[in-house]
Length: 130
Image (cartoon, rainbow, N blue to C red; front, side, top):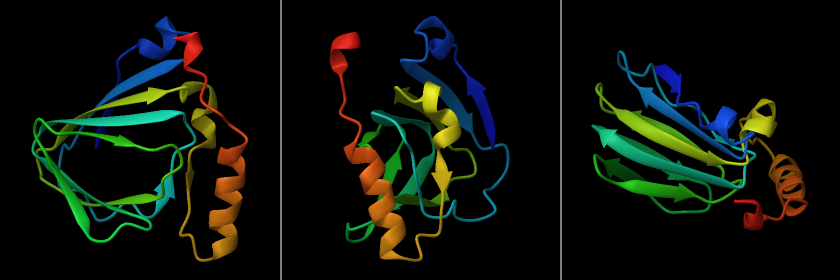
């Protein structure tokens, strides 16, 4: 996978980030269950397709070129498959300042999920800054 920062973080003092992500060969497997510590997370599929599963939601969701998904703050998800040529534009709101706080976990317990929710409940989106 190739990640290319599009420079929005530097231009907005970290309020908005954007990355172009593309597969340079097949993904070796699932990403694993994880969540992102940010106010907003948008994924726009430019090419190919990508398949997600979301905690608490039945079934798999496949997004194809031209589709856009807004992943709610803190939603636990897993990218389980994608096409060999997938390309996405990822836009993150208030993510860059906390980029180091993006966690990957196997969520083996309810305690892990509760801990993540406690962190998110302390953060209320403030869109007046934009």
